[in-house]
Amino acid sequence: MEESGASARAAVPRLMAAKAESGKSFSDIAAEAGLTNVYVAQLLRRQAQLKPDTAPALRAAVPALTDELLELMMRPPFRSYHPDIVHEPAIYRLNEAVMHFGESIKEIINEDFGDGIMSAIDFYCSVDKVQAADGKDRVVVTFDGKYLPYTEQKSEHMSSRSTSNAS
Image (tube, rainbow, N blue to C red):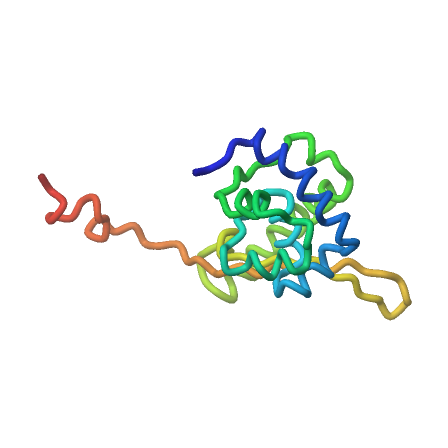
């Protein structure tokens, strides 16, 4: 059963309190649980579903996660965002970067893979901190998505139009 947006928002402060009690960063928890740091943040913000096989590792990394919270995290989440979040400077800049570089990224995907897109379902994301040659900190955001080719839309390939489905 999918939870409502209100239910998800109500759980987030409790999940973030459990993280705070651990004294660990998203990256620390991710390293201990064998997950990406962005996925850990998604789990704790109720934007991703915790899989039962992963629950023990997450609880070991964040001991304050109760059975109730883990059970809640294993329900399909209500994936959404508040529309005002696009005004938050870090998120605004991420959107700006994707919009600015998007056309070129699309061209390279098409050139290297063909006519298709990157999945945001079969997808991994991480954020890393590196030091540049000049000694300044740099943010590295990695999008690692499965390539999905567009299909040629032949009517004979449509399951809904096959003769075996005719009444």
